[in-house]
Image (cartoon, rainbow over all chains, first blue to last red; front, side, top):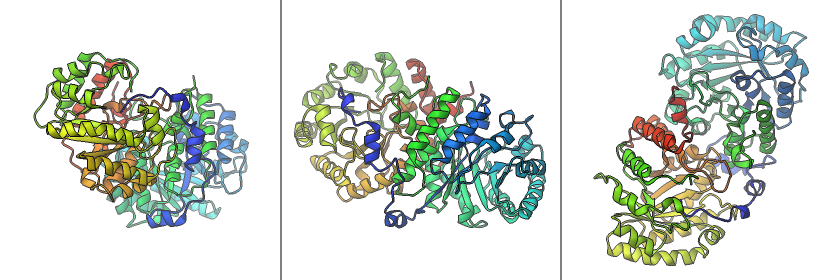
Length: 342
Length: 280
């Protein structure tokens, strides 16, 4: 729009621009009245899934030391939870074969949670063994029978039974369990998923002892409309404080969907540094929403996250350089002059 | 804001394809001097070459009276003028103050009134300026009010560098809506920081019902090298469809149009909906 300027070099540098806007750098002390008056949570917990969900969906196998460095850098950004790895058979997920080495190699910062995926009891025992030392685990359910069958070769009911075994063992060891519900807004095989089904599966996971239920828009097809309807159904069964949203940006809807969720009071959001992780169901498409872009939005809303956006961007830059790929974060693209790392 | 100069025939085809999608308003070209914007040098040929379907408006930019006269001569039935909420942006862009820029538009407004031609007003930098940084909501309201009082039937509020968030969008709209009726407001969000759809959602929640977008997200950002600019129409329509909001636009035809122009420009689409839908 308008005339293209010739004075590009006179523009404020991105650091100046963003710092001035208090949307970057140290977590700004937000005027609490502002976010409260708007009905939004004052604080939102960001669960960083880049090292697990992100890397699992990247084609290149990442060396163990790079994974460890990624997680160590993330630990210094203020992120309260970082999903480290998955105790799944390396036959199924070669990217996560080094789960024990990664767990042993990372620094554990006080105040930061380091959950790991445990698809079954065997994985759970391996995760919590002295060798690995996991102190929090996650289990993955789905709101779609077809997806459950294709992904883990059993029905939703059978998968719930497996998770109940894990939850029981975890309870005995005082280990918190986070529950994920995939396909909450649509399934690559079944298409439309009814909110009541999402509520039903969420309730099963919550009842067995999962402290938090992360509702995943696995293929990113959701919109603020379907997000609202799904959350309304789930909120009848699960307290708001136990809910999280895990939005994929495959159709560009993630931030709008997250905004809808937080307007409804959800205060936990999953995201992935640099938007790591493509979508296995739509070739060439993106997957996870970028942590940088989420934090940028939350900062602008005056919502506290405790996370330093600069350091997340730097971490994103590190992993993209290591993976020789372009970041999926628009904030990072706009902020680093070169844009691409090639 | 695309680097390659696009052949006239391709532009005409693009507009013709857009006319078939159900879109009701398609900004066709700009009657600006080709010295400043070479991409728009063929404005007259484009205006005369496109199929003008009934019920569809084809506004054109007219930065001054000369441009307005040329536009009308070429058959334009609606024009747009560009103001800004930032003094420094106005100075760097058109070498005068905001006040002076609006005075220049007085001539255009008078001529448009005489010819019964509707004028749309744009306000740039509503959520931030690449030179000044923060822009006060009160300033945006002031400039919007001036342009509305001058006779613009609609004011399109542009987040020129895409720096806004739902927070600043809300604050800005609250101020503007005190001066201009919401029915006369539009939002023009850039997706440079990935905030566009969230910002548009907030605007819709506040009652705005006109949204600017660009097929395939055409147009980079001249202020952030390598970054994206306009929000993609496909992604916007996808969200509105999901919200049950009627637009009259056929998403598939829109995506086909996006595919056409990206092939012609030999570039990748900026629309995520298009990227996800590609089976290749």
